[in-house]
Image (tube, rainbow, N blue to C red):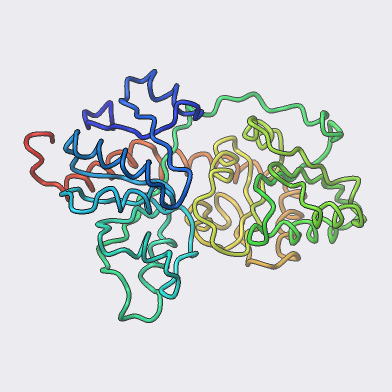
Amino acid sequence: MHRAGIEVTVVCPVDHPNYGTLTDAGVPTIDIRLPRKFDKDGIAALRAELVRGRYHIMHTFNNKAVSNGLRACKGLPVKIVCYRGIVGAVGFLDPMSWLRYLNPRIDRIVCVADAIRRHFLEMRPAFLRMPATRPVTIHKGHCLDWYDDTPADLAQFGIPADAFVVACTANYRPRKGIDFLIDAIESLYADIPVHLLLVGHMDAAKLSKRIANSPARDRIHRAGYRTDAPALSAASDVFCMPSTKREGLARAIIEAMVYRVAPVVTDSGGSPELVVDGVSGIVVPPRDAQAIADAIETLYRDPEMRSRMGQAARERIATHFRNEDTVRKTIELYKELVPDPGGLW
């Protein structure tokens, strides 16, 4: 949007990994910190900047930005746009939700998947629902050029060079369904020696105990949090996201698809919007370990199908989830909210 001529100023601490990228691109960047849900100093700093710069729109990208930004904008003629990346965790009986995404002061909620938008529009009771125009779907766009990593050498994790590898990048939490994926690996026939590579924060005591007691423990590898996660997915044969609920538009799935790795995902949240079942991957029901196992076995026994789905997965990201489309739709949203910003458009 900066390159398109939109006057964008980004609130970003100087020690954040994105700070250098923004400043190198010439994007005006302000070091304002919001360490708490309601941070007095942060709110004052935001408000001073909003008044000084006479901004038309404030676009927030996380919970703290929403709750602090709403207070900073009080009484100012600023349109408020919020980003929402997961399904759920918003409810009419939750006071905090009214101080964030259910606040009537919010003009638009950008949902990265249509499943998120539907959740807002189907919340109960119906008489409390927000206007249908408030949540809008703008898929999280990507560019193939961002992904040029060389596939990693998985031997560093004790995985044999000729192994069939299923990768999963996530942080261990109940809704990610990691235990169902482990169940699936355990249920595969002995002639399918699949190795499972878990990438992310997977050091929970419960998971460690689960793996230690697993008959497949020698084929389950934890890489931990990695900055080269896409390269690990690229070196795998299949990528699986076994989420049980609330999935948004997982970046880890997109990364694997770009590298032509056939995905197996559950019918949860935005995952089916990414993966066309039977074409660019396989979609299975949530909480169904046997369905996950069957999908993995199908891809293991049919290398041609796996290759075809991997190529289709890359093409789907290239054609349906383009960064250029995300930018264009966001600018169109801004123009809808502020049709006459004094010649800015």
